[in-house]
Length: 282
Image 1 (tube, rainbow, N blue to C red):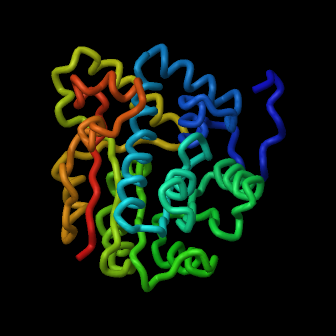
Image 2: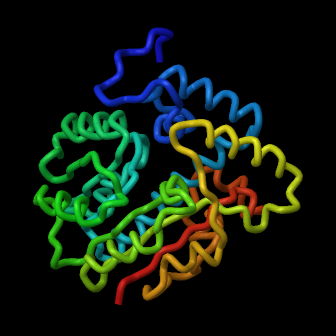
């Protein structure tokens, strides 16, 4: 970006850094402001591998969407979709199935504005859609997603919550929210998700750096909440887990990993600190 940031869209909080814009910066995007870049630069100083970890999360999303598209899923509801970057859900899915459709949802105005621009520039705004909304309100999100006309509620849909659930606090009813969404999905639908965890990281040499990163995020507009493997696994209750089950990001279908960044993590998958999984609704 230039040294002079453009005027922020209405509703954008520039008093504190924001997770969607920070993540965009980690991935090399330009939908971020000085306050986000300052946060990102400090995070890299504290934990030099954080950009690699961010890329591993994006790579998992791509592998998951490709798996779903190859297995007949052509409808996607991506909650907490973030700022558009290389490997967006609709791009990955339509590479496999040109008829795939996607509704993106995010509560960050920058993410929504950039997503809308991208869809319009690609000439696919009618086949895909983007909404600004709070994923903690399943009834509202579901209604508005269906109102776009993009999704058919009578056919299987892939519900995606990748890299977002850890922005919901420990006191929030995350499991109940997920169950509500799953109750709305038709049989044959899927749930694709990932989550930050500190399981397996207790004795790592960089534990202090990770703790510092947590404290930095907790001073931002989007604090983090880590959850255990058991808690994350419980989000898939009632679903048929797709092999290899609940694993660290680099362990999920590693044969399809193309990114050198993610391959670096293959020998120590717990290092990434992210669990992931895919479940099918019977």
